[in-house]
Length: 567
Image (cartoon, rainbow, N blue to C red; front, side):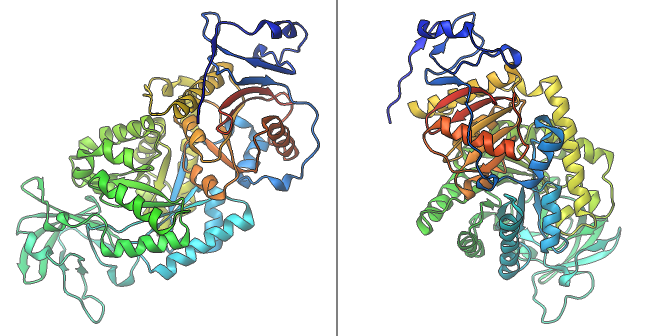
């Protein structure tokens, strides 16, 4: 593909006479019938635009049936009731478990703001997960949502067993518990927990500290008898099925022999085959140690299903991940800050700065960042979060992470919908405050494109976002085949929402993970005037836009930017 840009310091003289006759719309924007403007770079100009920019005023259009465009009905209702600035930019991932696996429960989460449904292969059978996936697909088809599905692999970490089928168990201070690699024909004896790693009893030593789920519960090893490790509870708390285990010796993390195993286990490969067959949108890989793991998985997915568009998310939850952080993020399609397991491997006081670093690096590299683990952990048992948890959520939103994730709060907590509501309301409040303070303006975004066409798209999106903020437009519209242009706009964190139009349902769902994007499914052509006329008609018919709204339009089909006042 070849591209060229012609630079000019002024608007072409052949068009200058038109400006005396045209109306002035919002913010003094002149909207002629058709004006093609080269890219101005003069000191008098406040906007940098490519030469194929067209500022147009669309004429009268014929009504098009509203059913030809697909949009999330909750977002549609919000736009009708509260306008453009009311939309939430930070996305929410909900882990699905026994409390939320039914169709009605899933619908309640979608109505409450769930953008991505996560299934965790540490728990449940593939048949159970398949049923959840099918319910999410049915929810999208019947109710008009675009909820994506993320499958989380178990990984090669050390995990507890399933607690004899119980949702949780309480470990009290001073109680003696047994962790064992033995398998029982009947349920485990009281206060006995299976461990999935055969070398567990050989790796630990008397005096070691055993941390459950990143330190939510702590034990001290007091005796080892064959395959049984006898421990005393030193920090009481709630034990959850399949919780991760780490152990420390003399204040340092013990790198057990299990850490030398492949990141993707034999079970994980079977789960990945399952995910590909079921058409999940994201695969989150646990305990990623290097970029090669991500590259290998992406090659495998492409070989198994050439048309598969499943994205790969790297979970950053170990010291090894941090050593190779930039390479891992570059190779992946996004990253998850798994703070629970990560906090068990690095000093607790390092976690906040590491989180901020990962979120900023993801944005710089144009990869979505998910902040996960213990956001409102107390809401597993209680109907409101602690004030400290609200502050923690607020900081993640202020850092402009793409998404927040609920784990046990939505999977098996007592108040999943209330936990979701907390994330939603806090996100809206902090986003509004950040826009007022312009907190997102300081991050330097490096150039990430390596080809001329990609560089042009990147610069167009950077320019469009700056225009949107400078002119205080109502929304950005982007027409995208692959989702890349929409992603580049999201990277800039503009003040206004981004309406992303794509003809592909899978791309629409993937875009639902990224900050500020409102994904629509819409077929469009290379004729941008026709696309805009049709889009305006469809959205006006639904009450989502109105005449006089100021829109900036970006297209990766024509690599163009347009400023439009809705007729």
